[in-house]
Length: 242
Image (cartoon, rainbow, N blue to C red; front, side, top):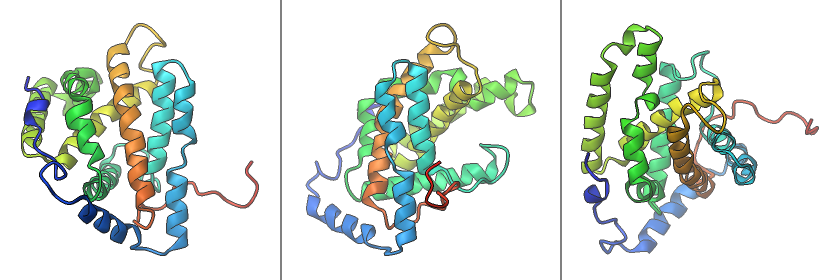
């Protein structure tokens, strides 16, 4: 298993790129749209109540659920079908992740720092965990897509290491997201026991990663309210908060 730190290259700031250049690019992107509806939708996506609540609960399950609600509010869009990770949904979410990375590169490169530096050990463990791999569960359910799940996992991870070496931040972020999505499915569909027993290790690792990933994504969106983050699936209707 290759350590992520050894694959880390010098960041643009460390290599001498003037920070004000990134700030200028950020300002241009931030002011790209004056559409008040678009800015309002961005504000609704990045409202911090679920994220803040994650600091007020005790268990990994509760923290993970609060963090995922905040994350889902950020990337969620108009429903595209019953299958939450069907082809249309996958494409839409991947487009969202790509946009986050694009804007983050213009400024702080926070997502890159989280993936390469802060949680290198946890991400390695997550990648090697079969319970966070979709094809394994397809195999368990007897679906044909799960055939040879172990070979699929090896190929996926080989591609992941290549993306690390090439500094493909989006591809790394995308793979980590979809492994976390499998943990999300287990939590929301009752596949983990509470506080002790099944699934505790990967849940704790996922919660730690989410605690940094979610606020970083929300910060990127807050800094670029004029960017089109898509339509809100369930907008607020009327003046009554009930």
